[in-house]
Length: 123
Length: 481
Image (cartoon, rainbow over all chains, first blue to last red; front, top):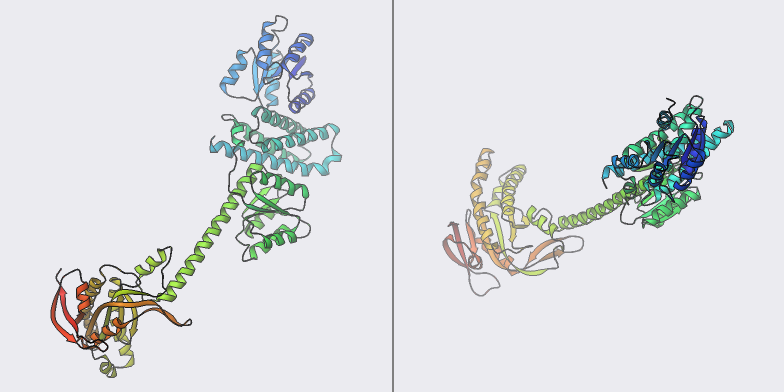
């Protein structure tokens, strides 16, 4: 059992889809629509893994990531960046901000599941 | 922005929207058999599709938003395929195509911003578009897309209405829905292609489903292009542009051909076969055409005659006479045309030609003289051929005179030709009368007009009716050059 997944995505269409799919795959999901909400939920819910879009309102994904890494209570929680950008620079940006892995949109779901399992140590 | 990236945008979005249209059609009859969650998945999928459609209409959709929509479509598509593929093969194949479209979008969009690809605006000169569709919302959609890029769009709800519009306006491109209640798109197409004035108007067939057979039938019947509903606006614009260009090209070509035909008909009727190709080409190439209203001009007139031809012809068979005279005239014609003379008339064995009309040149008299010399020189070969054929040898006399004539279309409305009148014509005829076989006689006026030196022989004086003083004529032996 993976534990709770925190999905941070401001795009409703994509967020709903991912929640639906994750639930169908037997996951427990909480979701946030901006970077600040994400940090709050990380602190309160202690999710097993975070799937985070990088282009977020209020607090963008990169900043949220950095803040999470600076917070001792949550810095251990793995974060997978979800990004529409696929260039090497974009990947590096996400990793530099403290993300553990990344997935490019449109998301390859089975691939994402494997990444989740890896990071939560179930694989 | 590269062309390949715009092409890939067009391709993947076309693929995607087509697959989506197919899914919608497949979904309707299946709806009742599906589980709630599957119906919801479908609803989300269609939401995503609507969103995508909306985005593709924007000049520069945000890549991030685009990828989110594609991601959602992919997610729902994959979920539905997992659930339904085994039971519904057609759904599976449509979903597979949908997912391939997304894959294509993804691979095509990796290295370049797809935003730049879709922001590609198709610029074209505005055209007059007739959109024929029985569904009001489709007509409005097309009108909206196309009027935004400056086209004038008229719509018709059915075949009869479409044909009426075609009758009233000069339509550049017809967008034709294939399936309509009153008159089928195929029938409208057939009528367009049968109509002498409409047949060149490009027709783009719009088919609501993947009716490949219908499309093929239409293309065989003369349709120029096709689009599947719902169409990608960029693709629609591109096809409209191509259609307008085809139509414009056709119109220009038509106009040009008509002009050319008119010109050629006129020139041919006017000059017949008496002008050299060069002069005809020259006249055809002059944009303002040639003034033929009858003008006074200075020309050098040539008259030639076979000596003693009348008595000669009495001793020969008619067929022999014709072959003798044709050989002679054919050779003379070639030479005269080579020197840019205008042959005015053949009168029996006599040739009347003019140098300096319809076009004046500085060396008219010289060309006439050189022409006469070459004509005489050619007699040797003509006589050799005559001997071979058992025909008698012949000699010709050539007279030249330079003077003012009136050149123009002479005759009645029923029969007219470009011709010459004036005293100088009569004078030439008078000189010709006294020219011996093998001789070239030129009037003093011609001699005065020559730029080059020629060897002259005897000079004579002639009495010409209508002139008091005697006319001086000179024998030309050969060019000094």
